[in-house]
Length: 112
Length: 116
Image (cartoon, rainbow over all chains, first blue to last red; front, side):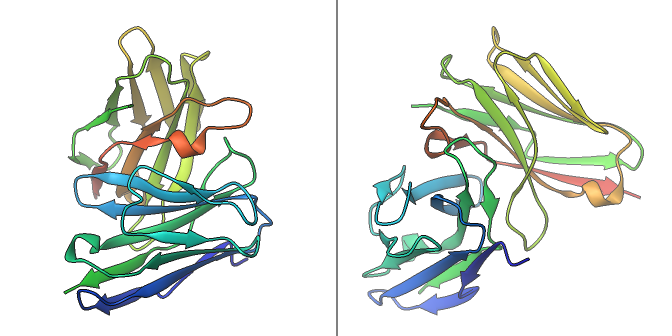
């Protein structure tokens, strides 16, 4: 069972470059989330989606954009990467708004 | 907004002993408190959760206690085993019929090491 799959797993960018992280889930979940994990700061919500075609801002949305064109996919974009966006990014999905979060294995992004 | 503090940041325990991780929260309206375990190179995984109408919940070797008056909750792991070595995150949220996970505030994590 694939569950939640994130691609790529590792990426190195230069300041100002753009990139997209892809999250795909095969559990038919309505709700999807993007988090970033930084040392000593736990997990912080960037953006989330409550269904196909919807997106909403989380705690730290600045510098990121998202899209949910298909129910199974949730894309996180960085238009102009900054060193402050160096982090490990996690995607999660859930069937209900209060249900267990199912996380992917993470994508480590380094911005030089 | 909600603020969740988690202690200790690192914890080493002899195999077979118990481990306790404590969290405090600031928003008295929070009513849902999950614990996630993150193994090396993996994403976090829910191991146990508790709602504010319950004071304690157990699942085999894992238990969570909640003190609403003091606004703190704790994870207890008994008879620790090597596979318990991981980073543990507590979280708090106000959940309703149509919202919840988007309001989850996570603690900063505890790295638990079980010494064989």
